[in-house]
Picture 1 (cartoon, helix red, strand yellow):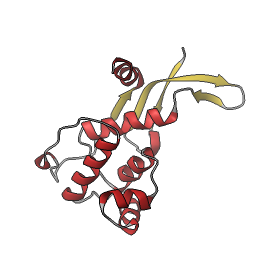
Picture 2 (tube, rainbow, N blue to C red):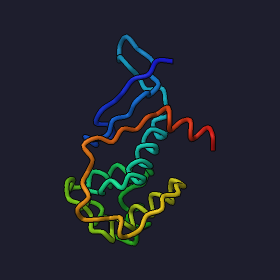
Picture 3 (cartoon, rainbow, N blue to C red):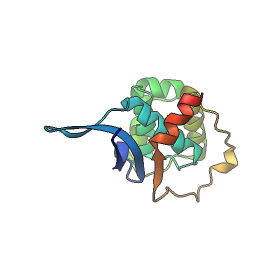
Picture 4 (cartoon, rainbow, N blue to C red):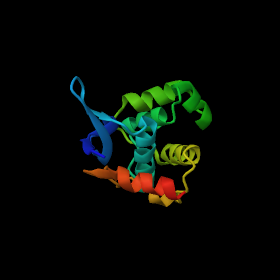
Length: 146
């Protein structure tokens, strides 16, 4: 099976997905054959596991990964859609610690992830990684084992 690597996946400059299965089309070039939602869920899981700081662009990615409107996402968090819109428009602004904790907990639960995190893990000094490499082969093997 042919595979390829994709950088800046999902609008996140630091994300690189390796070994995605692809097929080649004369008209379109490389076409990913993995289920698209599975790729996003794998990236979302890594964002949570590696404690990547949540800014507006991560919130938008996570919300879309869950296939939720701003209204439904906001309702799950007990917020207004205007709050989610503001977060997502401020792409590079990090959420407050309490909001980040709530978003992480909700997304982890929605994705059925066990990601132990303590409030103290969300240091305001933590930085977005220069690179977050997600290997499809490792993620899909975990899925098969489960």
